[in-house]
Length: 398
Image 1 (cartoon, rainbow, N blue to C red):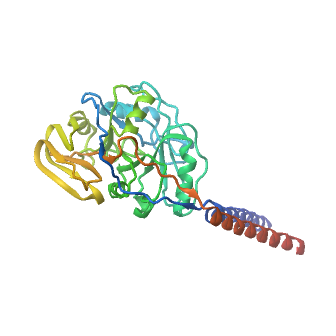
Image 2: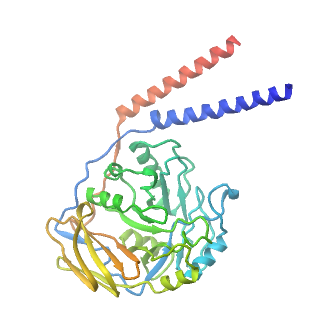
Image 3: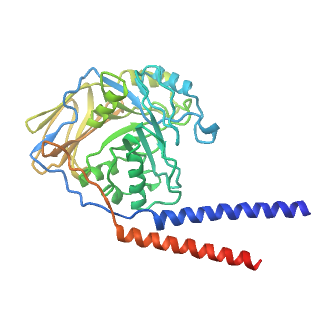
């Protein structure tokens, strides 16, 4: 009985410690983290139109995945396959670029077909899945907010990640309502939205961000955790227009928007042989060019339809069963992106043509609200002092 009593007391002691840590973590998140003033973004405007596919080479499209998990942290995190198993599978499927994205860890294993390692990882371990893909990561941020995040919490994490990576993407932002439409209207300092993900589609948030005036491009990923599961592998990929697969060339192409998000035509539990056949014959974007104010597009395979989508995600033009299509960029169009649905069910999501001044996109940077941040920090300090004093008084009474 004494042993049982001692074990219960020990358990209660550790539970109190864990509970105390969680309380302090929550107090820091909601009371001590910075409060930001967000700039008022403006819709894209200008007499020039940015073409992300200018100077693209129709023979230089590389198949890539930037969100895939291997066994990591001794198997504690969600990953069931080794690096070699992942590389073998994607090599079989014909991929040119594979950047592993283990949780909170830069995996240094290099895909054999790549010229150079592209350091990458997925950041985030909070309950709402506010995760980020860090392409060209320089170091890992070992911190995150555990509890549901405020808008300022989300911006704080983005700012901390920004200096540690070359490209930053919001991972599956619509999943679990981790990022809300109101959030992407204000969040700044990130480069991409993972608009296509095998687990969740966030196209609506991408349009919301673009409509607010945020010049963000897309990536598309499997986000697979088991390379042997045909329902999560070879379903979403990013086509990158680059001749070389070294880090500088790939990141430069992505930053310019020379990429296509692909939802590959797939059936449940289909064989990897069937996947390989479809992926090996993906249609080619022959050109997407701007002639005056007219967008002109041509593909290698007859499409079921080509849609042009603008402000607020509205379809402003469409053409059925065609190899090519055109759209006149109107004066009130802020951006136009293209969606190509092919007859086998594969869908291409292209980055937008964007109105701008001809020099650069407007950059938006939130500033710290010193008053509210100071008041919250003061309240946090008062709570810490109060809890500390109460604990000391209790110990003295004992």
